[in-house]
Each structure stands twice: as structure tokens, then as C-alpha cells.
Length: 451
Image (cartoon, rainbow, N blue to C red; front, side):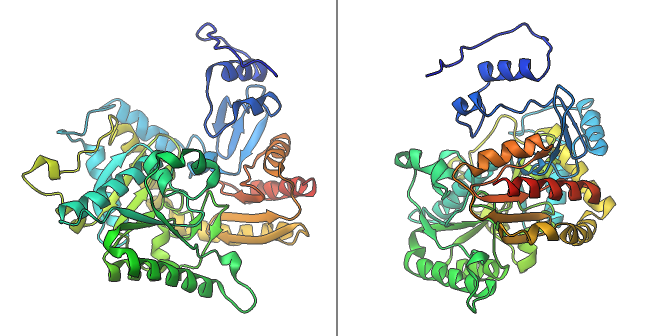
């Protein structure tokens, strides 16, 4: 067996090409979501710089970022307006604690998010990443019920295949075995109900029929367990880590009605689906509903800086308003509401407003649907689907190691794909041109041919 690499501490500022940085990274960095030993045969991809939709390694090779660097980059790498906003803010205030203090970017971002959020959501509570947003919402939901004299409402309900992060609270409402099973003994108990997976349609059943049946299962569960349930958490329209599983918007309306009827909070995890990915600013808009908690992260800063935000209702906020400190929400992060990150998010909102991004994306999606028609018709492609700018499909006959091989084949062809099992998906930056998208489709067909 190959020996475990020892920690290596080269001189600060040492330079080199791909090979040098690969070796240094393997010795020094424990990479996320990774079995590090696999990098003996599947090398890391060292990135030196990026611009637009392109990543570039230290040897000058370019790779089209078809997944927006784990779904965070909205407008392309190095977007000048976001970069300029961060630089301007760095000259004013780089950070100040938000406990007992406040500052302009945190206030203005909270105000503007409340203006565009569905329903009457506001009271922005900031964090640094998606899992933290999930933790905040779970704690906040339970604590609100506790403050209301209902401490028994401590259970949570999530959908089959749901993913909400990998901290312990978030993992407890995640139903992806690869991430969850090892830590099962550490997790709080929760319930899982069927997902409204549109791929189950057929034989006379429509996606709306599947959504209705799944909503009936949720309603039946809440009818039995609402007294002990704090909240239901869903990924609206698209379940990302489940394999870009898409569902009819009617499910959200039915789930909202069930939660209201049974006195249970609804948490909408729009960490991936928010900020235009599904064709509207927030996926919930397509069902005409407002959740009790809206979770935002990933694209909120356009991929520049870590930031997350939880928006909630006046009723939830009021449950904590008291002279007793213990009834307050005593949750914190050192970098909560960091001014640089908030300023980046404000620049993102400016771009949406100034560029008419939602309308532009809808037209772009229409053009891209014509471009990817040969891929959708490929004999090995199954369940080709699209929601907004998100495209996904399964590869028929792909082996158990397909995801690893397809990733490597893609990199060799200058495209970044990161399949989930047999599911290949595109979630590119909004700056992707038609020519770049056509190249992505053409090279993805090559990858599928080799599957």
C-alpha cells in the first residue's frame, strides 16, 4: 500500500507548474468531499486563475466551468462590478462584529433581500455557508415553538433524497447515504417523506400527479405527527445532490397548504435554486408561495466570498422578542454579516436589476435548448430535463465508476463536469455564450460516447 504523504512545508512563495502545486496540495491540504487516496490515480486539478466561464491551470490549459464551481458563480469569474464593489468596501470597512454593532452593507442587503423575497420575509440572519443557514433555520424553528410554549415540536421532516448540508443538524435532514450513514449515531431523529420526482411520471401519470401523490403523503404524515413536528424542509423545484431531481411547482403549493393547515413551519432551502437558477429569482415564486424560512447562500455573492442568509417572518421574529435573554436567538458566527461579503451580494443584486438578468436568462435557456437537442436525443441519454438554466440527464449503461471517469474525460476535453452517480448536469455561469455552450454540449457528447 502506498504510504500516506507526509506534511510538507515548502518555502512561502515557491512557484511552479501543475506538478509542483499538485504535490504541495496533496501534502498540505485535506480536500472536501474527497477520499484523498484516490488522488494517487485521479490527479487534483490545479487552478491558477479564472475569467468568465474559463478556469486556467498553471500550465495554461483552460477548462470551461460547466458547474459554476459548485454552483456558486453566477455571472462568470472575475465579474468586474462585483470585484470593484469588494475593493471599494475593503477601503472603508473590512469587518466589524455584528453582535451589538451594525454597518451599512449588512443593513442595505437585509432591506433589499426583504424587498425581493416572496411574501413578507425579512429579519435577515447572516451566516457564512449553506449548512450554517440550515442549522440556523432548524434551531430557530424549534426555539420559536419552544418560546410559544410548544417545546414538544422538535421533529423535522425532509424529502427522500434531500440534501441540506453536512454539519450535524443539516445532515440529520439530509437523505444522501454517502454523506449521512457514517454519522447516523450522532444525528437527531427526523422523518423522510416521498419526493415528488418528476421522473416517476409516465403510464398516464403527469409530473403534477406525482407531485400531488407526494404531497398527500406529506399531509398524511403531518396529520399524525404535527404535534411533535417543528418544520418541513424542502429544496424547491430541484433537489441538487439527489441528482438534479426536478418536480412540478404544484408540490410547493400543496406542501405550503399542508404546513399551514397542521401548524408546521415550511423551510425553503434555496441555497442552490435561488438567484435565478430556476428561471425566477427564487424557485418558490413559481408556486406563488412564501415559506416561513428562506435559506440563501452559494450564488448570493456571485461566487466571490462566503455568505449565507436566513430570512423569516414577523411571527417567527416576534416569538423571540422578550426581556429574557434566554428567549433570544443566541446563535453566532465570528464573521456574521461580513461587510465585504454583504457588499458583494449588493453588487449581485445590482447586476440582476441593471442587466435584466432573469429575462435574459429565459431567452438564453430557450436558445440553449435548441443547442443541446442532439445531446437530449443521444441514444444513451435518459430523462433529459431542464429547469431554468439547470440541465440534467442520466447516462444509460454507465458503470459504477462513471462519475470519476466522466470527470477525468471532461477535464481532458477542457470541460468541468462533476456527475452525481449516473447523472450528468450543467449549471453554468450566466455569462456562458451560445458558442461556449455549443462546445460544452459537443464535448459532453464525446464523454457520453465513452461511458
